[in-house]
Length: 198
Image (cartoon, rainbow, N blue to C red; front, side):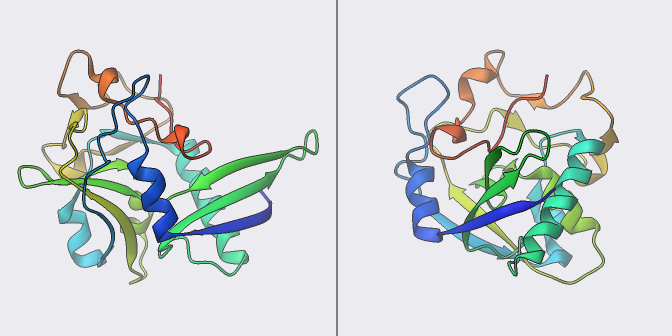
C-alpha cells in the first residue's frame, strides 16, 4: 500500500459534510440539526464508553487498516488524532491508476439511552484498544440523530467482537426488520468510506 498524496480537510469541513449525509436512497438528513463535534477519548475508559454494535471484525480488513495507519504515519500525520479527515490517494500497482478513499475519525452516535454507539470505524477502534501505547483517539460524535442507528449495542461490549475470515450469520442486533432503510449513506459526501458486508 502506498499513498501518493494525502489531503487534509478541517473539522469544520468534516462536520459540514456529515450534516449533509442522508439516509440511503432518500432526502432525509438525520444529522442536519444535531450537535456534532470531535471528542478525544482516553484508552482507560474508551473500551467501556465506546459501544460496538458488531459481533465480528474481518481479519483482512484489520490487517489493511494497520497498513493504512502505518502509511499515514509515514506522511507525518497521526491517524488517531485527526481533528478533521484525510483524503488518501492510493497508487494501484496493477494498472497505475489512483484510487481515492476518505479516512474519517470513528463515528459515534450518542444518545442518553445507549451512550456512544460505534457506527463506523470498528477496525480502527479495535486496533487502538488492543495497542499497548497510551495515545488518545479522536472520534466524531453526533448527538441525538433524528433517525436512530439501525442496530443495538452488543450485550457484552468488546468481548463480543470476534475475529472472522468472513462475516458470520449474526452480524448485529438489528432494531428493525427493514434496518437497511436506516443506513446513513456517507458515500454521498465522502469517497469510499463504508459499505455493507454481505
